[in-house]
Image (tube, rainbow over all chains, first blue to last red; front, top):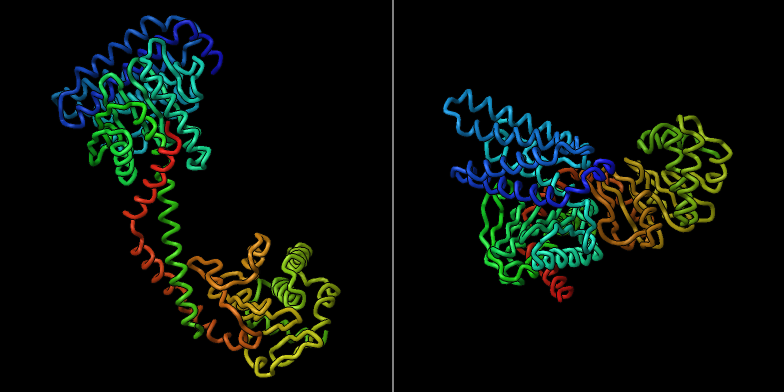
Length: 318
Length: 219
């Protein structure tokens, strides 16, 4: 892994930047497809970004894994778009199947390169996994892994934040604040060890992308220029709690998307104070675990009392 | 020890422990507890005996004698020499072991009742009383106290408060009946607990804690 990283060093900054851009376009395209809108324009732009990356950078030595993975993702996006536009059902199914296989091939290489899987939809059955929205979402997640890998070639600021050149200082500030508060929550024992290990932030342009947990797709992004926050989580109680905290403590205005959390953000907010919003996102990590523990403790207390009463009654005592 | 074979027969009927060696280990641990009240020493004794007879062989007669020679069989009671017991406590199926420091009632299961320092705990269903009491002891908790000490769907260990050894014997039949009802009791209690959980209140508590931390740690 390190050798490949060395091989990338001269070009990594712009590669990471371009990959984050491709990821953003793919996510937006997936979102549009999931809402039944034509999302192909953005997906084709993402395809062009990947295409340029391959042409400009993949002749260099030491980048075989990255370039092969990029090649598969590039083909996957093209096949998805052809499948989505196909007139005949058989042709559509065939193209989407091929796209699914390309993403699977890319993921295997990405695991070799980064040690981490990337597909959110891997566990779904074929019918769900091979929808254009899900395929583009998975492609975006895999492109994100590659972007993370490239961005990490640069030393982190504030431990968990990786900042690309030319990043908006407000975005850097938001990421640093999130990392600081995440450390505070971690020190208070509020995070599971898996979640704590997964936390990372990437700042590119005006966007902060935060990996806020170990579950696939548990992420958030803030665009400080546009004042938009998107949060991805399928756990409804956690979404409700994060929404309240964002509204109360960061003055955000949030919309909860029922059924969102993968291709579609579960929360979409307008935020004026990106730093305060980033701080709140530190609370989202492991919140499902904490809620589960609270529920279990409350349940056990009632159950124990009931058993004690039942036993005492059965024994005729007290 | 006189009456040892008879004692083994009783343990077999009560299904205390697995195999003869397992049964005798439970008996010796319970007798040790009743005599000394020293949870740690008695657990070590039991572990040592189990290690020596891993294949269910007969235990070293000398080891058994060391403990049981201090006891005599009186009706259904195994009583440490020099200790007085109300004879009415020694007429049941269960085996009541009475020592200087406490008493243990062996019935269906590995242990059904324990009185130490005047406080009693009982086992309902399939649960290991001695193990639970021991674990609480080494965790620095009171050996026996009122309340549910441990439970799952198979059985529960319950501290029932102040009681005398004789009262343990009187509970034997009720314990057996309660064990038969335990599964349905656990089911009822689980359902009641499930219904009682107030998800909204729990979410509120979580939000409050996060709010406190975010305000405290915010600049």
